[in-house]
Length: 160
Image 1 (cartoon, helix red, strand yellow):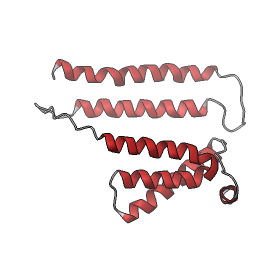
Image 2 (tube, rainbow, N blue to C red):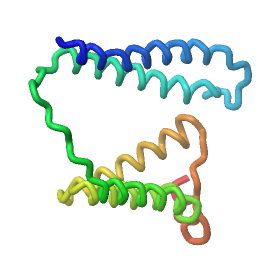
Image 3 (cartoon, rainbow, N blue to C red):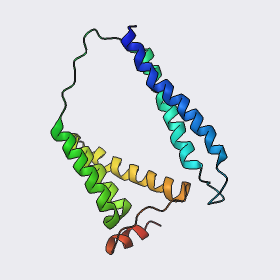
Image 4 (cartoon, one colour):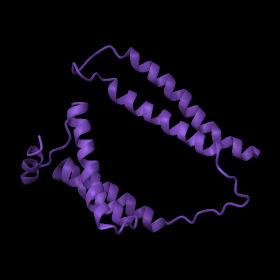
């Protein structure tokens, strides 16, 4: 393993150490908003996921076959600009369309932009990801999501 390759381990190790520190800090939260889920549930969930992904990265780097000459990937500025545009459209439309409709359309547009042409995946992935996040926030963490306005609000309230 070359010196350059050893440097790739530094960031995941720092992330793990910092995440453990912040996770321990969540025990100092003194107030509770809901009897089932206190304010520490979301930071703890994110920190555990960060630790797991950092461990996966370290594992992958440990067993990665080192290629002698890695080609630098070409930056696709047009696709990046489209992705940022879709993200801003998603953020601003959520207030009016509500979480469910805006997330379904955002996920579908992002998948199409990335070149996915499989009809089954274009239907199932947006539906399942929207549904799972909706359940997690509404019933797991008791955090309400945007409902939208006018007829879109009625549509969102149908799922409550």
